[in-house]
Length: 562
Image (cartoon, rainbow, N blue to C red):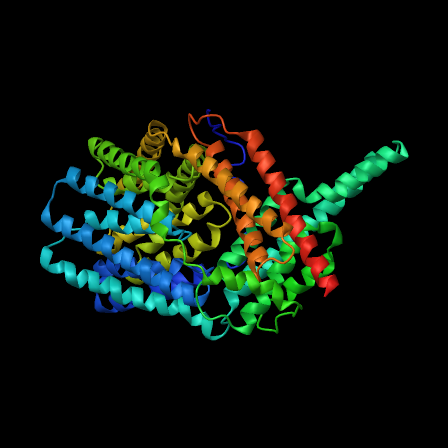
């Protein structure tokens, strides 16, 4: 199967993230003190090393604080490890070919680990940017420990910055995820009500019996139609459970939030019986630090207790399916760097990082990211050309310009990658001047060449390395959905299932359905992929959603009987 390579919609702006300002402010506060201290000491040439640690502040803002603390620690460890390897390589060899090869291998490892652990945006790109730039920084072996120590110190400061909001709003991430799930469920309920009304109007002229059958099918089967609103809502609910089911102490606030997510699940399974206004009122109540709305029936959380008692799935199980993406990254980054060297560009790591930034879940998304990267960088160099006279007024102006672009990049990138790149590009160009001012025309020319080379060569490498495992993932996801549905159906047939067993099976089935949809969308955009079993997918999804609805009816019957 051939993937379609779209142009329309690639540059369309989306809605900003609910917390777009948090990573934007965090990175500014994390970067500013180290840079200002170095400015005062007259050692801005060391800013690249402190920024390695400071940029860790971009990660894990959607995670609960206990999980965020662990995730940020791992990000910092990955950052300084990549930086240390790059600095050691730079101190041992001056061969640009060897350094590009090391950078490509590091990029592949960083991409694979970030995807396997699902660390989230900005993913491996920041790690690769730092390690690739460090490969071409003048270095001696004796300097490496001190430079790594600077990154660790700045990273510790970034960790504190990211954890500080927890003192004022300790359950902020969980509350936001729950509110998002409730609002997504409300949007789905509203769309189903509209579809049911349209169906009723369409059947108004039919015979009474046929009209009645049509209305019955519309009301009973609404939850089985896989509309965009349905997919968005199911994904939001699963994201909320992912947040709430992170390991750690379960406070009463967390249990109350879990009950609200259960309400969102019920709305997805039985939209016709859902109070739309109540869902939205609950979501509004989760803003700030006010009390969490209370819902009855603690028994609904027995499945959560069962799920938390199970051992967590190790992240390294995801490494195997990511092998084609790792090969694409290594090959594309290496070839992009070699091509840049062949063209005589002095900073081949720009081409390497451009290639590394392209690789997404499939060819179609990789193509889209390539278009966004090129457009953003082209506009970004124009912004650099306009700003560089101001930045050259002095070191303080240079630092302030970089801080402004740091904020702008994180504030805009959630709207679309190309929009954020407009700020990332001049920021990266200005960072090269921390060690000394450089001729702007040469910087702009080299950046343009490396952008085009990296995007073109990186995409060709993605086309050359086929990902046949995307289809295998769909087959595994289909099997998981069918197994989860059969297990849930067996429990429904039992007169008295074990406490929490049905709730856990319901949640496992919902997660399997979300994973199946993600697998299908990834495989559908892949290059030279075998035909997908579309009929089996539709059948599995419809039966799975019907079974989910049956569990809701079962819970309600039990509640009425009690």
